[in-house]
Length: 127
Image (cartoon, rainbow, N blue to C red):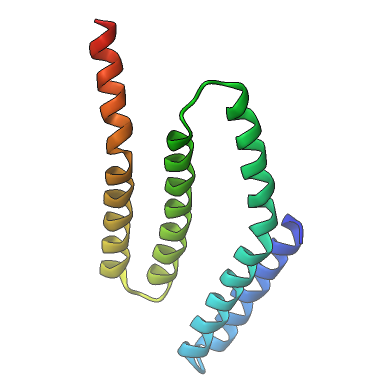
């Protein structure tokens, strides 16, 4: 499925959700959630190609594989967090959305601490 198909699916899901919301809010939310899951699943093959490209690029440059691992995990956390936050906000749960955002940021920060340590060590050795 290409981007046009994903966008069409998203627009139809939102339009269907708006039409259904006044009759049954739960079904409306499930429709949007189902569309989000389907769109994410259709984008998975692109991730495989992305990982292959990043692996190819990093193999030609002297970069620690753990840096790339942290980068990819952080990117995944960002996407999952943003999708969850958007779903919570759409359904009127601003406080839950805020807590999910904070948790996502903290998890990424914790994952990046070894990189910060290496960076500080490189700066110290350079001086």
